[in-house]
Amino acid sequence: MKILFLNGPNLNLLGTRQPEVYGPTTLPMIEASVRQRAAVLGVEVEFLQSNFEGQLVTWIQEARGQFDAIALNAAAYTHTSIALRDAISAVELPVIELHLSNIHARESFRHTSVIAPVCRGQISGFGVGSYILALEAAVIVKQLA
Image (cartoon, rainbow, N blue to C red):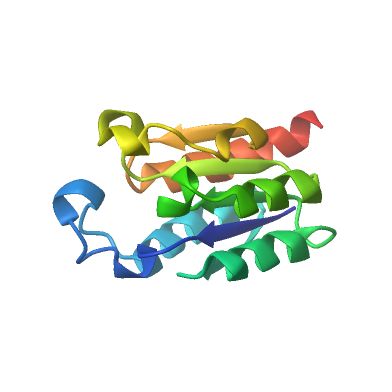
């Protein structure tokens, strides 16, 4: 089983960007934690990050036939990107939406996810644990398919 982790804008700044909201952990540290758990589960993982919406769309499209699921932290694009929503719908892969912070407990503009209706589920508010939970959710989704 192969799971693609996609990270959107500003996640390359984790560890230094608003640590009071996102914590002190960097994206490479998160990736190492996920890789460690994936090894226990016998799952392959790949990580990509882009600040560009079109690049994320391209990676979602290219995932078809190469990955069994996608774990997506679309960051700010969660609330605005119809292009990501359409790409998710088009590839017919289970997509787990994930967020480090609880988007429903933050500013009102963050409460709406335009991608949630086309994702298999949403994990929000568990910090680094959101990534581990997304990994495990993707494994469960595949096992139930």
